[in-house]
Image (cartoon, rainbow, N blue to C red; front, side, top):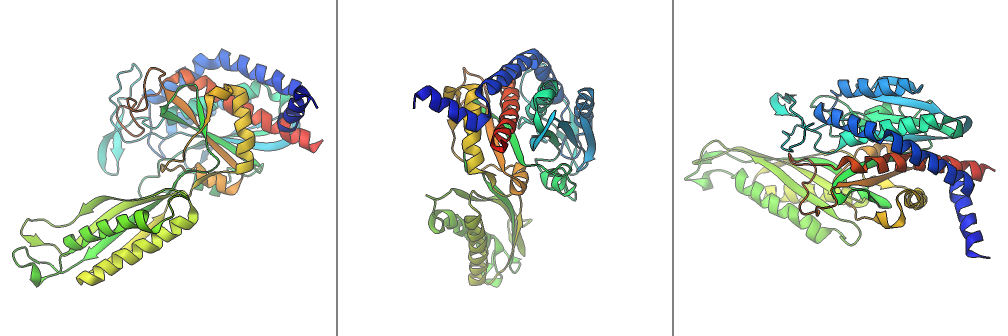
Length: 437
């Protein structure tokens, strides 16, 4: 069998008819070129007017207006401010969901660009600046571009597309629900039922116009940790008269570090246990009655996650007991591991290479950051990838990381995001159509 015949059979199995796949890819390229300026303009507008979690009113209105203008059926106020658009193709087929998160962060922007945010608002009782310091503005603009691209190709779609614009990925304000979990509860993956979901995240330290991906665990689970150490208050000059919760808390912090270094099989997956805040005491000469610590737990493996929880409780309570203190440990489970379905990932990687070129798509390492796209991927097969946003003349060491005042994205790479999500959708529909035959 010749190489050309073998390649044709491979493409037929993955993407349907090679000629049809190529024709549709050419259409995507043409439309993406035509709307690139609009996508960049949307992104800059959203960047200049950022909104915190569950407060994305302006952004949601902008998205809904755009989708309606394309003839897409729209649901609003899903999980507070979420927007869901439904585009039915000319023929029946799978339901493909595409997700973008909309919220910004309580960060004061330092980047010198004409569309820099000057927005301030109240967050948890404090006056704060607001900035798209994680790139969710680019995600919204890209998905708006995908919606326009696919709506123009509606007659070529074999299936249905659900556009999910999600609030509160960074976490709902205290006392509120929000994010992907709430969207699922309110039916974002139903009516019609979603078969597969795709999502992307811009990355400020990955070169623009490149795409990184990973199979299975790609982003970590995240759990909240609170430890209270109760001692017996006494004069700082006579520590033997009480039980010192500060010394005990210090020993607990050091003890927790042995979980990752001595209790986990790190060749299997990385993990992190971090204490980010310790509070207790009011004076230099008073040993306080109580110390409170809060922290975060990250893992890329559910079994390791459970083991970490068990060891935290054992270490903290046993150290406390040895010091004569009472220790209370509270662990709140947060986002699960962001898991890329292996079979779907293997297929999607080839689609991405067809779009971006083999030399612009790479296998990346897992990261200990977390994403609530993970909730969607628990319900249906999901694939989540990373789009480069770092200027080509910079290095990863020079580029500011996410969640910082100097975070910067080169928006010349947004067009690749539009093409990648559009082609993933079309290719998946073509694949299912071929398999159905």
